[in-house]
Amino acid sequence: MELLIGILSGLALSLFFSFGPAFFSLLQNSIRHGFKKAFLFVCGVSLSDVIIVFLMLTVLRNIDMDATLHNVWVSVIGAAVMAYIGWCTFRQKAKSIKDERGMSRMAYNSDSHWYELLLHGLALNILNPLIWIYWISIITFVSGEVGLSVSERYVFFTGLLAGNLLMDMLKCRLASLLKKFINHNMFNIFNRIVGGIMMAFAVYLIGSMIHYQATKNQHETKTELPTQSEGIIKSLHDNIPRQGTPRK
Image 1 (cartoon, rainbow, N blue to C red):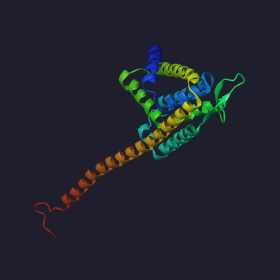
Image 2 (cartoon, rainbow, N blue to C red; image 1 turned 120 degrees about the vertical axis):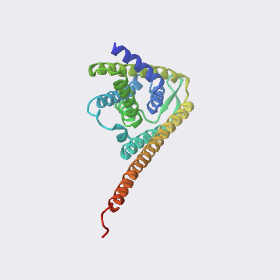
Image 3 (tube, rainbow, N blue to C red; image 1 turned 90 degrees about the vertical axis):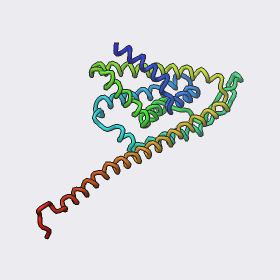
Image 4 (cartoon, one colour; image 1 turned 90 degrees about the horizontal axis):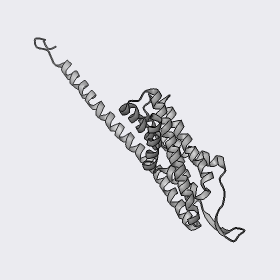
């Protein structure tokens, strides 16, 4: 039962809450490479999800992940990787050439190997702190609100990840069908849009980290002020002469 609920939940979550950098990169790779090659990108994304969920349920379950993910270095590295991939995508260009039958088709300056597509999906997803926060929210809700046992939790998340993968495969297939309707000029514009979105996400990561650190510092300052005030009041209280005690 938990497996079926997990699969349905994965399908729903992937359909309604997956419009991040990986989604737009999935569309771009599906249009460029077709379903078979873009499926490798999907596998990379899915593998990163498996790694994140496994770590969250095991070795990282007692760590303050909110503070860790908003760490300066974590945010900067994640933003740098996303900005780099976004910039490379922004600069990708296709041109129109004639094949042996005289039909026009898109051609690129370079082609991606299978392992590059796999690593692209893996790196883009696993180095994005927003994905970790997404999975933290789901795991916290399932663990706290639903109240599943440990074994039921593993079964549920197995189904959830499977449903996620199935929906991503469907998106990949549908996006690959658009290839025949898109010429090289349209594809180049799409590349610039996708690259711009990724670079915007990189800026958002840095802004989110700065906001978190500023809020944290303000909270710590407010916490320290009462402590300092209590110390001053206690010092004054200790120096007040008690009744019947002669002044020196």
